[in-house]
Length: 167
Image 1 (cartoon, rainbow, N blue to C red):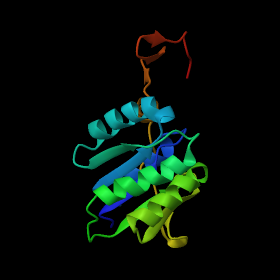
Image 2 (image 1 turned 30 degrees about the vertical axis):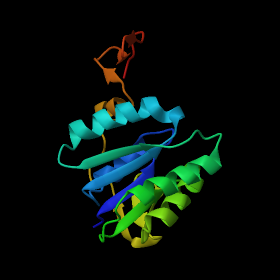
Image 3 (image 1 turned 90 degrees about the vertical axis):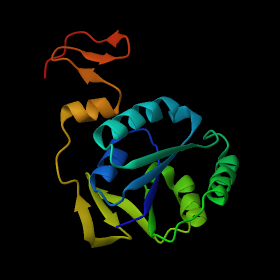
């Protein structure tokens, strides 16, 4: 449907994980701040393992403490990208409006994708174009997208292991 979908890495990986599950594009470019660098490493690993046929690009911007520099960084990135003649869209969430609107402007995208409820995605506010993520995400997928593994008793992330957990 879209040549590329642009989005912003937020606090939760689930909106981006669900977005990719819509299969609205073969190419995704996600912008992030230094505060989200650890999340990006985890998301990149998750996406490339689960969707090796798709293209994922992660672009670092200035810190959230410097919104003007973020906007300038977005403009600079799109000055360096040869914009394809394919339709593109920007994924907008409540916590990423400043960056998303700047991406929308500089990417020359025609469409916005947003969440309606749960993991139901809509394009340009048109409910008839909505897609609910076709498969429920499993607990293992959700944990892996956050960098965790559940071994049946413990959550494990890097060298850290939690006490016993009952599910």
